[in-house]
Image (cartoon, rainbow, N blue to C red; front, side, top):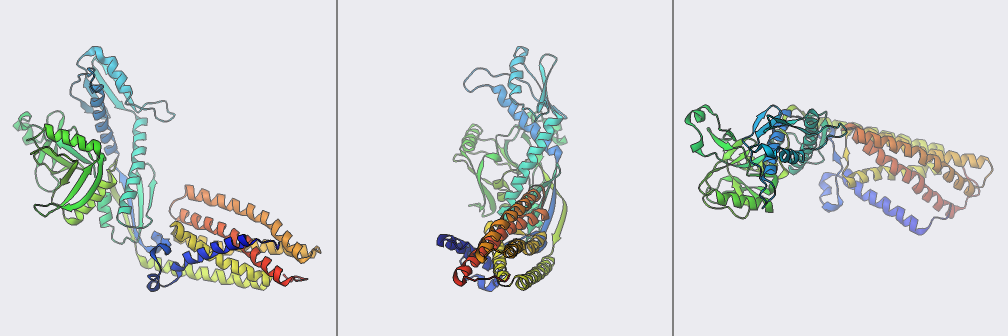
Length: 535
């Protein structure tokens, strides 16, 4: 019991002092915190229910997933039919047509049907353990091929799109400079976004509502468009009519995308050097820059459209090849809208359109009241526990109380260091941890009493009490950590907040109640060498 090495004492004090320093910014006034170096004052982030903020529920457009997958498959089919670069194995096919979940096209040489099927098989994948493929392939009338998206395939595409959308939503929210947003999937087609501290969600809604699907497409040759179809808004096969985003009118553009936003490496708000108007400057990666240079070189004198989310921002003429992989997007932007567009493009295009179906704003006044009530509950629980331990266990109660105070500071410091979010249920977990933190000391002290009644000497009784009680303490707290981990994995929002604080509290309480209190007791026993013990 008395054998407490100096290195161990030093290690314990380093942990305790570190926890105290990390917790200080939470307790000192805001006016004094500026004197502490920024790296040494990590904050304890407050959740939506304490700091106030915005709650937004986004719903995915399933039809957009279907359309995007059809677009992607159409491009893949064209690429597959081109064959290997430099080889004369291209397969000639007719124009593609869509119907529901299917794409159909004619193979000009019916003898190549087997080769077509083989190439198309490589474009499909198995869907989990269903035994189905993502697309079915059917040959009709010896030369017409129909590819149809299966139900299992569509569901898999939706799941993948929602997972990707959640990641992109998180990147966009973080780009606004907000702290610790809560972004979770709800059901098959919804995403819950909670952003503490954001009182005006207008900018957030505008940002999240943008799919930011950037496409560069060539305009269709006017000579191929009949005046009647143009007047009626009809486009020839392989083209479609798209409206302008910020002005009246529309253009007939080719469906084939020559370059897309997934090849962007940079997007930022800028100003046009000639007009001084806000624009969005973009830069493509190496492959995108090469493609952009080749296409603009081959189409000098023609027009191409810059399209975002199915609307044309601008449709300039290609006066000369555009090398270097950089371009500017103009379209009547303000500085704010250009910044929003740049964030959306840089974070990546949403794989599915999202719309706001529910919006709530939580005022910070409710959070302040909750914090005040939680502080009162925490202080009350702490004082009651301190008094109880002092009255019942005397000197050993003093050591338990010191360990409890360090435990509180360690919990706050650990939350600040890890960037954990404190929610209202988290305050409940904090108060519960305070009450349960002395359980270990109660077990230890009662076991010491029992050993003294059996006639053991002081040091032997204390040694046995700590040793035997520690087994039960570790077993009990391991089960609590398992329960908290399950709540964290399967819970969301408030449940996770409760689980985080509870887990941190369990770990720190075991450390302070067993190790720290034992260090204090061992130090006193070495100094005093008491012949008897009143506990």
